[in-house]
Image (cartoon, rainbow, N blue to C red; front, side, top):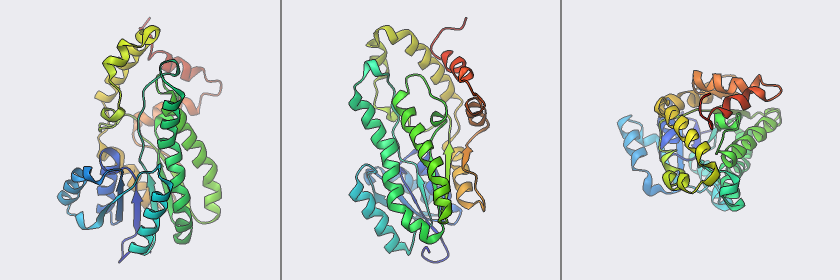
Amino acid sequence: MATGTRRTVLITGTSSGIGLATAVAAARAGWNVVATMRDPGKGDALGKAAAAAAVAEHVHVRRLDVTDARLVAAVVEDAVVEFGGLDAVVNNAGAGHVGTIELETVADVRATMEVNFFGVVEVTKAAMPHLRASGGRLVTVTSVGGVVGQPFNEAYCAAKFAVEGYMESLAPVAAAVGVTVSVVEPGAVGSEFVANLGVDIPAYAATAGPYRPAFTHYLDRTTQAFAAAQTIDEAAAPIVAVLAAERPPFRVQTSPRAREFTGVKLADLDGSAVQSLTGGWVSAPS
């Protein structure tokens, strides 16, 4: 059990965006937070947000690259020793990726899978014995892109689909040993996620060749979607609610728009509804 009366949650990817907001919100909700990030030198924003919320003493920054198996194991073990146990994990770390297979390498696809899927698996493997000991919970932030495949997001959606399938399969097994598993699916969120894609969008469009018209339409649609995005605090609230819920559901969307969007897929037995929807993203209106 966590130090004092607070339970302990380890959250990955907390230097910005949903992870940052979740770390602060969880601390405000009474959790002791192990806030991990690949580069603690980028932790100023989290530190300032935690101080502003008067919870800085309950937010403990640790360096963690989720693709480094040895470091993952060490950070989890150190947290258990330092804080007396581990009651929950929020797998949030990830990286966006824009591209299509003819214009990128298979290595690009593998790298996207490594961060977004295998990183989640590494943290989950390291945490499960401790979550089993505490009767804890495992929460993984996926995406509406883990339910609905999206144009020019092939590798990213493949990784998120894999995470959803992994967690859906793990959930009953984990439940049998007292661990609750949930996935949380944000839609468009106003964070640094898009800025951190690592893609020069104008340059990509200029070299897209036969894909340029489709990519231009996709970019226009996506820009509009992010103009009406949730805030990071709005996206973090359902994650913290899952941590606190007596009987959390397996799947949670973070907004009505995300529920509507994923609902198209979940009710689409032959796939035609999704193809009709996303096909409109890459072509001019008729």
